[in-house]
Image (spheres, helix red, strand yellow):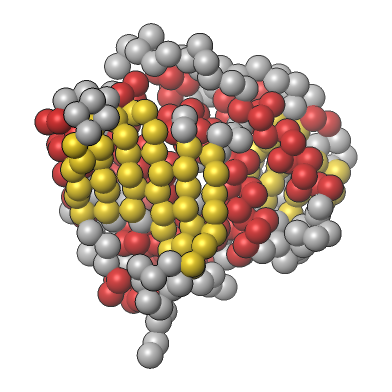
Length: 327
């Protein structure tokens, strides 16, 4: 796909859009059970699950920050899975920018023993990933926020790198920390159900400029004190319980092909809880089939013809196995 293929002329600043959401977290930190501190550099750290309790609502708000202010995340009851009554629903009317340009955890940040993948609007200021060349998008703002799925505060060297790469002063940087085992971390990971679909659409080389709109849902799993089990449950919520509805331009044939290839069941690694798959490859993500990371079921609507095509299926039994259900 050429760099000029996507019309980015109407794309807003994801960092400017999220500034009010970040301010809301800080102003309501006590109510949301968050801890806010200033680092020596002046950068702000919002703890949503390390020393702080955090919670589901904090996770929901953080997920909307991850989506660059272009997505809505709701928690509601659902009868789809009898044992898991709460569902996260996600929608963005600009899913390419929201999910890939902001939410995707694509910025590798490390120093000595610290490592985390940065997600959220700050990525679009740094533009360190090849993806931004393809999208033809670079944000411009004087404040930035990154969400890190980490149980450690980023060291000074990482803060300096982010400030340098984004061109934002350290005192205008905010890092939101959401450990996998926390309630907020669980929510913000499962709220990536639409982003996971968009990422696989990109991996399949379906034209991103043909993606018009998107919505998705996935069940809320119970958190787990064990990191591996917790990571497995959040992934399985999407792999076995996620359902994405993507609206696309183009031919019916292309939409039908996408519906067939997009679900997680199209992967050779599908069929076991993610924690088992991860252990089987000695915890090396790069040995897992990348086609696995996608919602369980998809509906693709070709907006030109109005026809819809479906693929994959929801799997309550595998969800129960992963989530630790016992009758």
